[in-house]
Amino acid sequence: MIEEGDRVILVGSKREYYLRAGPGKFGSDAGEIQLAGLVGKMPGDRIETHLGKPFTIRVPRPPDLFCHGKRSGAPMLPKDIGMVIAYTGMNRKDSVLDAGTGSGVAAIYFGGIAQQVDTYEIRPEFARLAEKNIADAHLDNVTVHADDVLSAEGSYDIVHLDMMIQKEHVAHAWSLLVPGGFFVTYTPFFEQTFSVIDACNELFSGGVNCFECMERELTRTVRGTRPSTRVAHSGFLTIARK
Picture (cartoon, rainbow, N blue to C red):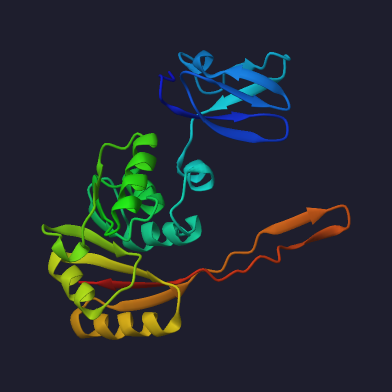
């Protein structure tokens, strides 16, 4: 059941809207909706505008938060987050350290799978935004730390970094990982990726691999179907095992 303050998505015939249930109203070319009328509804229920136009109520999942949540910069794409989850075997028993939180997209995906996620963001304004997005996702197992990841302590099954990575970050990640744990970095450029690979080769005896995941969306029109012309490259994933 939807409660006051919950995020919802209203899906119309042509557009969808990311809103919060509670006081106030929302207006579009389809008419106005009193947002208090969303409280007590269930996912899949319908609500009508004052013009009688129907919208279906949807509760956001991580892909919706990726599309609609407020951003502090360019987040990791779902295709790359999926590779982190797949190649580390992330599961409900895992404790995960994430750094370079940004708007919290990767932490939200990880929080839906792992037992516990600690995510570090050195920029306080980004950390505050991530906390709001994570709260909207109703994840009480994700903790945002407005601090340098080099201050992190403890023991983790997976360490994931999406940030400017220096050799000391690789060494610190190694020290935090349990035996058999995975270290993953997301880097956009060859030069930084090579530096990470070289640093990992000095420390990680369980193997080091680097991947690029290419994604092409199909575009279908009356003229025909072809791959989208969007840029395919996003970043490189380096995965090392302790």
